Amino acid sequence: MAIERTLSIIKPDATKRNLTGKINAKFEEAGLTIVAQKRIQLSKAQAGTFYAVHKERPFYDELCEFMASAPVVVQVLEGEGAIAKNREVMGATNPADAEPGTIRAEFAESVGENSVHGSDAPETAAEEIAFFFAGLEIVG
Ligand code: GDP
Image (cartoon, rainbow, N blue to C red; front, side, top):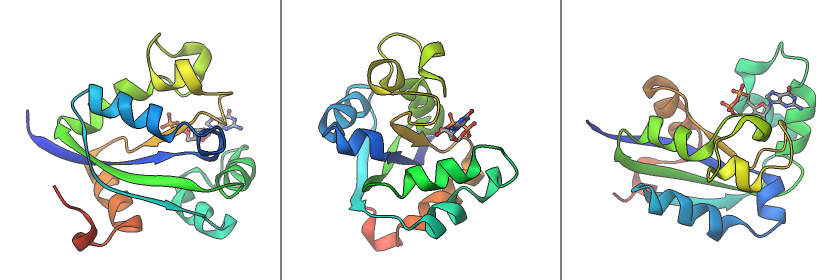
């Protein structure tokens, strides 16, 4: 399988509970390497641009409010099949459906406040990485 890069976000519910290290350990234990990482505070407008694909969904406004409610940690994860592997480690969107041992099963508070974001395909991974990082900030 090819070496890929994917965009990950540790969301406000997790940064507020000081879970960055525990979540990073899950990525590293799964064989993913954190090749870029920074803690930032998104504005609601920036969150809205990032999640523009969900604009028509009923939870869009709530999602943007939530993503701007506290700092997030944005990161680039690298590894073999990193996009699918990260989705596996994250678990299902709703923590009630997430496999035991996944980040969302262990840490998420609800379907909205679910601790992590991960890109879902190569095209979105490339777009989402470029949204947050300049090439020079990614050190593989
Ligand atoms: P993901 O790829 O697993 O993150 O899931 P989606 O792309 O379907 O949704 C993006 C994000 O929107 C999720 O991670 C949640 O934070 C949020 N979200 C999805 N469904 C709901 C919902 O029914 N209610 C609320 N409040 N937020 C939701």
